[in-house]
Length: 257
Figure 1 (cartoon, rainbow, N blue to C red):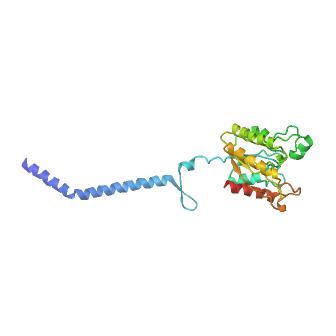
Figure 2 (tube, rainbow, N blue to C red):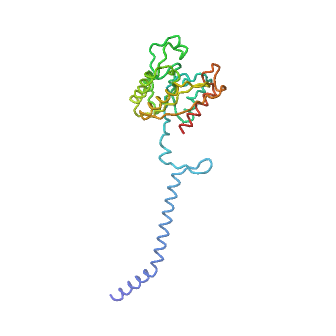
């Protein structure tokens, strides 16, 4: 019995003596296995690109690309693109620069105020139809488009309106627009003029537009008067040509940046 105990003690001491080396070997083996597993995981999660770099399969890579926001433009003949050719209106240029999809609701001869008694002959000259819907009347079409952004431009066709009509009509339009599109981002540009000196009434109108859009949580874009050169106007000397539309677009994009 004592002999057997002595044999176990010798064996235990032998194991005890070599245990550090055994433990080191086991630790090394575990490290090698772990490194191999990690390498396999990385291999499965990375794919080579044409240039040799990896493309990681992150959640952002497998989900659909974010949908571009939709912007609706409300305005007059400038907004409608009169004077431009080949689709070079400032609306298209702004939308392309900002990465927006867009719907253009601009109508020639229109403005912020209702004009239910307009002459059909003048309407056909303005928008090509017997009746040109003014800004409040296109809100329904804007809502139908379900926009993320609304850009309102124009106002020059209202310069001859009375102060009382402007004080009542412009705020009412923006309130109706906000009520109809409570989640949309709303921008309003300052009213534009041609190369001639703007009338004093245009400044008064601009002040009302600024206060009205800001009162509904929108943003006023003061563009100045970018059509400051006769070379930016079409043959009628009123509407911007392609270069003029680019000048307006540049002024808007600078304010949006």
